[in-house]
Length: 66
Image (tube, rainbow, N blue to C red; front, side, top):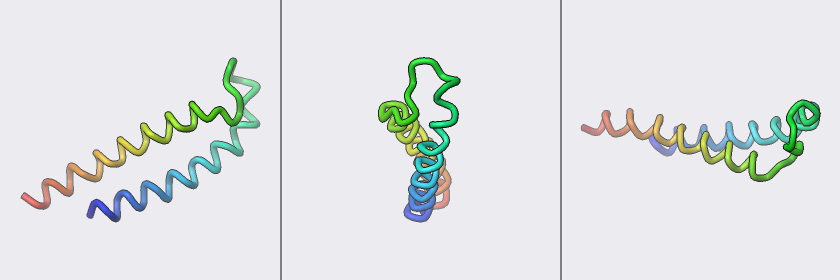
């Protein structure tokens, strides 16, 4: 169960990063001090989403094994 959830999160993360990088160019003029391809922002957002998806997958998996 965890493998499937983490796999879906990884696929979603890859698609999301691609869209965020491409869409960042159009929004970069609206946000002060952030470049379109700022690696710190992209990495931070990816880590936060990965942590949330891991917890959201782990809790039901743990409950189903009890």
